[in-house]
Amino acid sequence: MDQKTLYDTIDPEIITRVSARHDEISNGASTNSKLAAALALGSIPVALAALSKDVYGQAPSDVLDVLQFALLLEHLESEFYSRGVAASGLIDAADATVFQTISAHETAHVTALEALIMGKSATPNPKPTFDFTAHGAVSGFNFSAGQYDTFKTLAQAFEDTGVRAYKGQAPRLINDKAVLTAALTIHSIEARHASEVRRLRGLKGWITGASRDDLPAFTQGIYDGEDNVNQGGVDVSGLALTGSNGGTAAATQAFDEPLTKDQVTAIVSPFIASA
Amino acid sequence: MAQKQSLVISSADQLLEGRTRRDFLKVLGVGGMLVLLPSVITACSNDNTMTGPKPGSGNTLTIDFVNGDIAVLQFAYALEQLEADYYTRVVAAFGSSNLSSAEQALLGDVKNHEVIHREFLKAALGASNGFTITATYPGVSFNSRTSVLATAAAFEDLGVAAYNGAAQYLSNATYLTLAGKIVSVEARHASAIHDLISPKSDAFAPQAFDDAFSPPKVATMAQSYIVDKLAFANAPGTFVQGPNNNG
Image 1 (cartoon, one colour):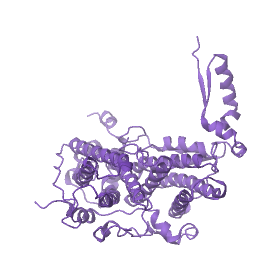
Image 2 (tube, rainbow over the protein chains, first blue to last red):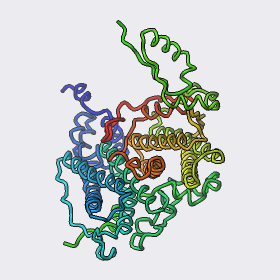
Image 3 (tube, rainbow over the protein chains, first blue to last red):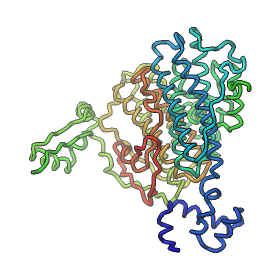
Image 4 (tube, each protein chain N blue to C red):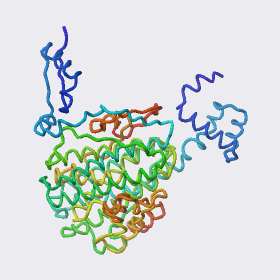
């Protein structure tokens, strides 16, 4: 077996990871038995065959789970905006370009996520049936003329949720650089959308403290935790220059916070129709 | 026969460089064309922008990727220093600028955020924070709403693309999350500033996927505003492109 040739066909990063994993194993970290056996023989090329589901890529199932979860959120947004821009007399004419732009993006995100999922030899989950009244919390909302304020309220809720949802999932993608980078380029687009919708509604483009501003109480979970000022062990509200640069309010605006998958699921579940 | 060449001058300082003068003569010698981008014209109308040090003319600032995640944070720290310095100057010039009061309030918020980002990274880096960049703004007129907003939009877009592209070099999940917490605020800024320039158009988010730029590409773009010569050591050999495939 020509080890040099085999090495040359492999992403150097994998070699690095296997080497690092070898050290972890030496230090007692657990691994699957095939990989451990291969490494015990001191043969990195042999070990490569065993690691596709272990060392490299968090576990492909984790990445797939993130992609399917993101797909659900994008389906929610895509259908919401598609129906919004198609509805007669709903969106103010002056704002039509903004929402047509957002709508096109969310549809493109659905397509991209489906392609990423199929690229992992999996099948994209189907679009569920949505209930944009959130089981009655948004009473009577059905994209009718005259409901533009409610439409913008929901748009803000979905966009601010989307930013936090992608952010929360990023660490699960840390070993799949292609999916991570794709997800991040969607994540920041959701933030652009959020800022625009918030400003259309007369708010700042950024979130202050844990304030939901004028959104209804059922959206509070979208903003809980945004008042965090502990960033990686640094209290950013207590930095020497924070006081003269907007204080704690600015310190909370300057960092958007992640949500866990469970937290996001609790926020979006009311928008999924009961089976 | 030599092909006709064109020489593009994008910053006024280029006109003062020896290499540019040689190129200029070469271009004229073959009947080529000299192109002055609008930034040069703007710069020439403002003496202040002509006297600053040239971008890249200072000491070399090397970010060594042998330090792994720390190098990524140092790169972010350099960019946040640039942004914080820029908005501090923007705010300082409010008295003589034609920005509306609402625009000044918005840019004041952005200044606060960027200063806090810079100070956060300075604290997070600890002993690895020992460098300060010197910024320069060729062609920027801090009294001009148009100039200030266009430069701000460029910085915010670059910041978003920089974080999106550098994230792949982080191996620590905590740092990845922190980068994510900052990049979405940069994207909120970018959206708002583009909307000030071109209200209710598609400018707030002109594409479905943001850019993800490699650190060398970002450094080349940021270098236009930094006196120190940016350099990388042990830079990663591979870059995983984002959906726009332009990093």
